[in-house]
Every structure is written in structure tokens, then in C-alpha cells.
Image (cartoon, rainbow, N blue to C red):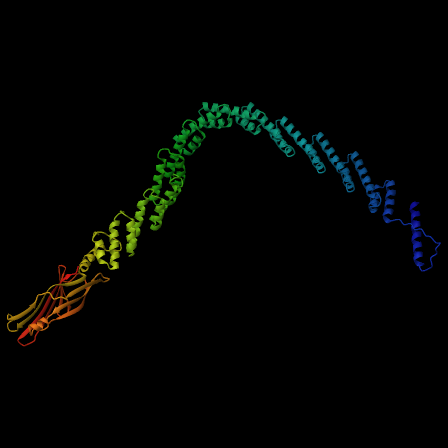
Length: 626
């Protein structure tokens, strides 16, 4: 046998090699020649596989070929065995077995066509047997190897056609939809809807027919069918005076014949009916759809206007404003909105007023919003902000009046807080508002009182009625004070002598009728009077001054009399309410006042002997210097 022969040779060679290794130290003979032949382990497996294959032991042969590795054509031999087995299984219709064998063979060479072919053959067989689900499954498996889109599509399409033929429309649509996952089946599905439409039409189910024909889309004359059926139904509805239904069907009819014109007419009638029953939303919708029919646009304004007024009554102001704006120039829509806004402002409902203002006349909207902001600030007492907003309103409505009113209020506050200079400014700006002029006079009077300029204060207070009431100022009391202080204002100043009478009288004690008198009546220069005044916190007045007068000091001789002396005295009268008619201003010295004139009187008694006494007296009348 070959195997024994090869084995013997191998053993001999191994044995010879051992002998050679053992004798390696011995001298080599030049004439000795040794030939070595070796067989690899892979070759041995290959030889064995060949023998097994020849004996028909294919499974064992495959194992040996595998052990032979890449030796010679081992892998191709494995492929050939597996492929031959697959072909035999296929011939015996053992499809799953054939697939498994081809898959194994595919580890060595491509068997895509073989596996695809098996699944495809099974799919065709199932299709021929009308086992559609099985056919699809086989085609899907085949599709893992090659494209089977057309095959799967074909199965679903066939099912759809059969369902359609049996008038199983829903099934047909489902099958066509599944087929549509592989190829477009739009026309097929539309065809089903068209068939349903025809059936519904033939049985008098017109609404269904319309629905189906609409779903059929552009298929054949489906669109025309919809229009024809809808138009016919609309005419029938009109004969029954059913405008709502007529509108529905004329809408479905689209551009068919005079559908659009008749639809607008129907909407107009529906709008009029809705308006009459105060269903304003419906009326607005219908008149809008009526387009240019008759006076639909005018009627639309009426509907918006009516709805707007209704919403104002319901206090839904922003929505009302939207409607009134849509009403445009109808009736008094603009005036009504303005009036409503003013009413809201008057009620201090500023938020709603501002919301409505957003929809007012665009040319005045911003000014109106400034006006509202001004009113809001005014009512909250923020008058400075109010003025700023009203000024931006640029004279809208009564903005100018409110500017004056705001300044007026600021003026009152300034008086209350004794800021009289600011009050003057505010009341100047408030112009002719209320009693601004009178309050300007009050603030001016108070300002000059603070400045100590009572003369100027009197000028302003003389213009003020005592009945005026001002928070922070007791007008009646102030008028009384001003009246009182005015005398002091007039009195204050420098005075010079107008006339004088200086006398010395000697009187006998035992008979006072017996007396001698010397007197000087000629004006003695150098005499003067200076008066000043100041106001206390309690509004009482201090009158102060200096007086210089001439007086006699001796009776002894005429010469002594004529050589009298000047006397200067400073004085102060405190806490006065008026100028006293007579007041002591020094030793033996009296200041007299009458009708705006001042006189100083000096009087002294001199008991110079037991029988006589002297009386020295100086009376000086003063005149105010110009």
C-alpha cells in the first residue's frame, strides 16, 4: 500500500538522520552521498482526504481537507463537495438543507446566487399556490441576497387587485398601501376610492360619493364628479331654503359653473340672518366670505361695530376695540371708541383704556397713550410725571388743562411745604386755572415775608381776598397780620424835625397859677428819629429806633435856657400788634403816634427850691424823609 510505503521511507529517513547526528564527529567521506525526502503533515491530511473522497466518505474528507489548511486546492475541494451536496438537496426539494449547504459552501466561495435562487423558487411556488404570505416571506429572505422589490410588490399588488374585484375596498387599499412601500401605488389606491365613489353614487349615498371621489383626487374625472354632485345637492338645498347646506355644497363644487357667485350670495343671506339675531361672530364670518357681493363689506362693518358695542357692555374692552377698529368709518365707531376710552379713564381703569388705545386711530394712538399715562400719573399724585406725559400728548383732548392742573397741585404742595419760590413758578405755569392768580399772590406774599420785604409782601396780599382758603396758610390771619405790619412798614424809616416847642416853666408851689415860662418854637436843627421793625415767630412785632432831641436843663437864666443840650436815646418796643399811640421810650421820654405821625415828648420836673419847681418840656414833631 502507498501509505505503508511512504511510512517506511519516512522512518528510514528519520533513523538515518539520527545515525548522522550521532556520527557527526567522524570523518566525512567525500564519496558518500545521502538523499533525504520528507512529507509535511498538511500533505498527509490532503492525501488522506483524497482517499476518503474517492471512497465516498465526504464528511470525513471535508474534515481532512480542513486539516490540510492551505495545502494545494484543499479549500476548493471542500467547496465542491458542499456545493454538490447543495445541488442534490435542491434537486430533492430539500430547500432548507440545500440553503444550509450553500451557506457552508459560501465560506469558501460566493453562493449568493444559489441561496437567492432557492428562496426565489420557493416564493414563486407559494405565489402559484396563492399562499401570499409565504411567498412574501420567501421573497424577503431572497431579498437578503438580491433585490426582490418587484416580487414583493407583485404579491401585494395581486392581493389588492383580487380584493378590489371582490369589492373588498378597505382590504384592497391596505394591500396597495403595503405594495406602495416598494413602488408607487397612488393610482391604484385612487382607483379604489373612485370605485367606492361610483358605488355610493349609484346607491344614492351622495355625501359618501363626494368623500370617496375627493379621496380619489386627480384620478380620472373624480374632481369633476365631486363638483357635479355637490352643485346638484346645493341647488336642492336652496329650494328647501337651507342656506347652510347650500353653502356647504357650493363650497365643495369649487369653480364649477357659477358656484362661487352663488356661494357668495348664500353667505350674504346667512350673514344677514345672523346679524338680525345678533350672532355677530357668525355674521362676520359669513359677510367676510360673501366678498364683493352686494354691500357685504358695509354689512361686515355693521357686524364688527355691533359686536364691539356689545363687548363694551360686557366689559371686554380689548376685544371690543379690535372690533370697533374693524368697523372702520362706519357710523360713530371712532367716536364711540374714544368715548369709551375717556369713560375708562374717568373710572380710573387705565389698563383697559391703554388696551383700547392700542387699536385707536394710528395718527393719534401714541398721543392718546401719553394722555392716558398722564391721567394715570395725575390721579396717583405724581404731577411732575403727569406734566411730562401731557406735554408729549401735544394738546390732545384736555392735556393743556391737565398741565395747568398739575402745576396748580404742585403749587399747593409747595405752599404747604413753605417752598414759596417754587409755588410762584408753578402758579405762573398754571395760568388761569381755578384761582391760580390768587394763589400766586399768596405764594409771592409769603416769599417776600420770608425775605423780610414786607412792603412787597403787602403789595401782593392786598390783592388777596380774606375768604381764600389755602392749606398751609391762614389767609384771614395773614391778612390781619399784613394789615397790622403795613403800619410798621409805613412807619419804618428816617425822620427829621418838622416843628418843636421847647419850654421851661417855673411854678410857685403855693399857687400854681403863678408861673413864668420861657419857650423856643424855632426849629432846632439836628433833631431826628429813626424807626425800624422786626417780626417775631408769633407774628408780633418789635419796633426799635433812635431819637435825638433838644432839651432845656436849667431855669436860672435865659442864657442857661438857650444853652440846652441834645440827647440821643435808643429804644425798643417788643411784641407789639400795632403801633401804640403812646409809649415810654426812656426816662421822662414818650413816643406818641397818631394818624401816621410821630411826636417825641420830653417832660421833667425840677424841685429846685421849697417854694418853686421847674418843668422842662420838649415836644418834637417829626416828618418822614422822602
